[in-house]
Length: 411
Image (cartoon, rainbow, N blue to C red; front, side, top):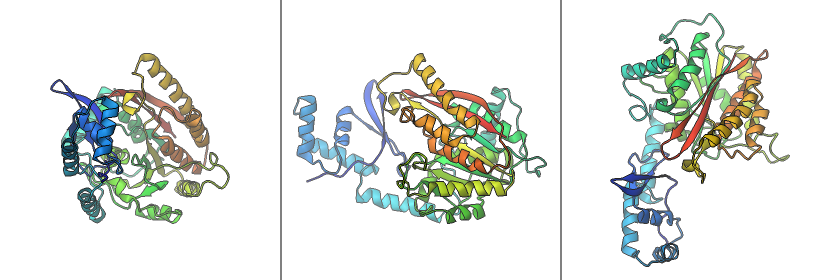
């Protein structure tokens, strides 16, 4: 009899009380708790593909370790533990999934999922933390502003979506430039749908909750974009629930403007631009959607800002590479990142995409489609944009690896 399949989870090796373990966590956020598995228990978990039963797993164990030490009872204990935690594709998890999805669907706002998880949930504490990011970067502190704009806002901004703890300086450098210009009437925010649902773009009409108040949703623009979709852009709206790439941008905008600047939240999943696909292959309508984005930017005549919340390279053992992070590796990543970023400085969406993909995206630039989309949306600018790379950095991943990111200002 086949045993239930393990869900798609994050697995990170670590040491606990001097012993090796593998930590399992749910990237979709349906299960909040993490589970530590011994190497043997993790081996069992890795064999749970929905096809293997007790005997198949025991035989794989013998083939791998050369010893017959695993019993059916041992396997059942691991399966039972994983099922209790909601880590298997069973009725228990599907019931939990339905309950969580239903709560989100009925919520009038997109809750601040990472408040008190990744950043302070108290507005005073969060403001103090973000103020420190500006001060430590030698930048002037912004003052919360609700005043009317008297100058045109920044056209575009590429900023990270890494957590504030590792990327606080980068957020400060990028958003300080946004704040120096006029307040946008609306902000078209492209984020990365890390869960990669089978739709090129995912929309939501929900305002975004932050510790500084709710960031309104520019629903009329969202509805206009929805009309341009050849797919249902709300079918996977639940992906917005835990996705951090837009949440961090909403927090920064609320830090500046409170609840005075509406956003158009667009999560970018996987798609192949028309110029990269074989004739007739591309059926998802992604380019038509981006054409509509550009039309909206043009119609707003410089009063709307476009933001891409996107990290760059993900390199190292945490991301599947066999090598360790050394200075030559870091330098090679930096060189390729700069090569890609040259195309963002000329707002050349096609050039950027082609540059990243010339080595089949071996650096795992997760912001590939997000940055491409933002640059395409800026095709609607009336005049030639002026761009500047104002910050570039990388951060170490605790599980072994680096993530790089940059700030590109487009005015």
